[in-house]
Length: 267
Image 1 (cartoon, rainbow, N blue to C red):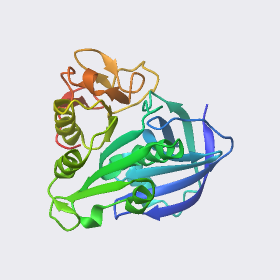
Image 2: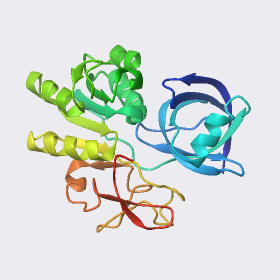
Image 3: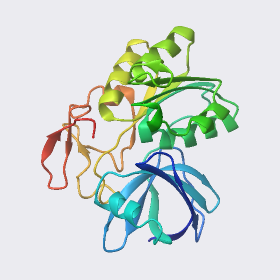
Image 4: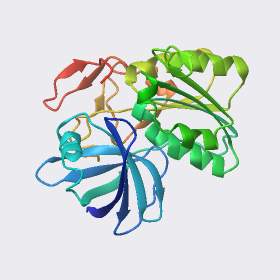
């Protein structure tokens, strides 16, 4: 069943990323890392991570990528209401984490902001490593700085923070401290590299994956991770690092709408 959400505000974080704040007709309860399905009638439906939620107000970070998001961006001044269902999936396991390491890239920061805010509200300590292509692609910096003890920033061109990928920021954080657990969300090739480094350093980690999700309840199989048969929509989108380290598709392949397996190239 869909819940109607009235758009309260639209904030451009970059030219291709917006933050939508919706007022829902009824409240929903969600954990950091879970997602909702957003439906635009006669256009399509997509999964979106919950970036913040309080009572009936929900905030979503949306990047312009495909048919649905392109339609939304092109008609953002005309669209007053959106339809959502959920929340769905397995979120982050963060209870009793006293010192957390948050690692994100681009719009992958969406669920991590929710997570960082929740951990901080429960008395935990946040250390954030965030990476972007350039300073013009940076999002949610102020929000993360408010809840983080340390923020390590990297950009590919060096226009903000350390020059390099988020791995450069992560290596700096690992040199300076020890952490109870790490939480990762971003481009999958980045996630693969981050996971390898964290496991090498003996740090427990959870990773949020992005896949083509259609049904959200484990029926259609479009989000399957082979060869284990894990379903991102239901078994994830958050998985433990130990599980992902043994998933053949992770960091290599995903499935298109047709079901065809394609090589991941920072999709």
